[in-house]
Length: 254
Figure (cartoon, rainbow, N blue to C red):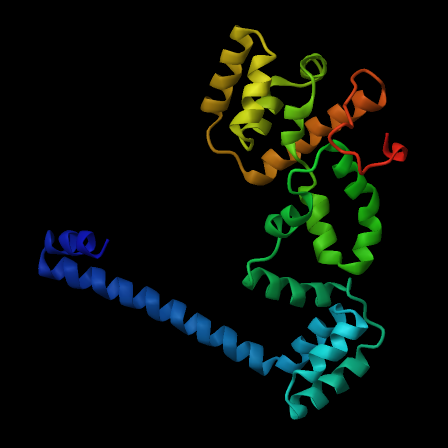
């Protein structure tokens, strides 16, 4: 990579080369200054207060253990601020904002965190998560909110019989299907194509190709819509989704 950059610079005259280097330095200096400003603002804003907000998010036992890890002088200041936060909950916006920042910086947020729970669960497991998630919110609001947003798994289609897939396809708009499939595995796409006429499958492939890049959030919302149709058909008895691969879910979820 470095060699390529050298070739590019060597191919232009000295004046243009110096101008490019100055532009790089200027942009770097600006980003560097922004970094220092953020650190300065964080300290000036009272890092003890941010620590207190993070501690509010923790359960009592974990909070006490975390406090003991702080230097004594810092622990006293943070404990004092915590006392003023006696009415705060882990779901308060400012508390979640502080925790969210830490989790994002640690790369454990959003879809990555949600997938720890969802993984490749079938439709009955996902229904169990959905029904329990309100209770889970009290334990960990941010994790619960991430799970709620990403609670969709198109891989469940692979486990469903062809007749049910064909009934489901009759309820689904082609444009929605094309958008939803852009974020799925090859096995899911092949399952769908196999249950369509050759002409319909070709048109769907063309729609997916000509659609171009689609925002991930739009794909996710469309997938939720299509899985919702699948659930409705199952509840109405129009299709039957086998529970043989999910023995841990009880009949109350049927």
